[in-house]
Length: 214
Image (cartoon, rainbow, N blue to C red):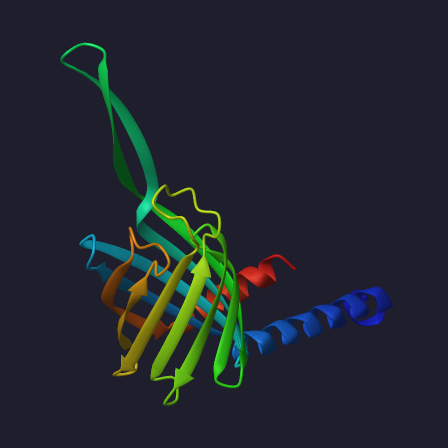
């Protein structure tokens, strides 16, 4: 009786149902993509891996989150002074040490016709990118720029990367490109592949989490 006749309880229930309906409506439109990608870099014979989560609430925009296994995650330049014979003569030598590190990307993307424009965090630094879709998104050409003030001693310019990716069999991709175009000491061609699938289970998990915080 209190639930039916008290105006406050009725208003609270009505507000809750409206909020639930709005959340479920947004959830039905949300698309969640998960992908695993690997790139083989010819110059250094390294493999660079990616785990990607793409949340797309509408056809013209999406949010991209990535964890990147970067072979040049940390680069240190060390100098060594060596005294030679006869005494008093010193030779200075330099060496570069690389360490693998995980890096994080978090980007917002918006589409204008066949062109996507992205901006945000790319591998731990601010960056921008663009994608051009051909043949109904079967072929994608991408250009990314980031790490404009790199601490890498072998990188004097921003990191610029061009990628061409071709999709087939719905879930599979092959790709090739040129990384670190502006830094000739560490530039490299690469080839790779990826698998991407749409995950409805993650979509409903995210919807449940959003309801829990209301």
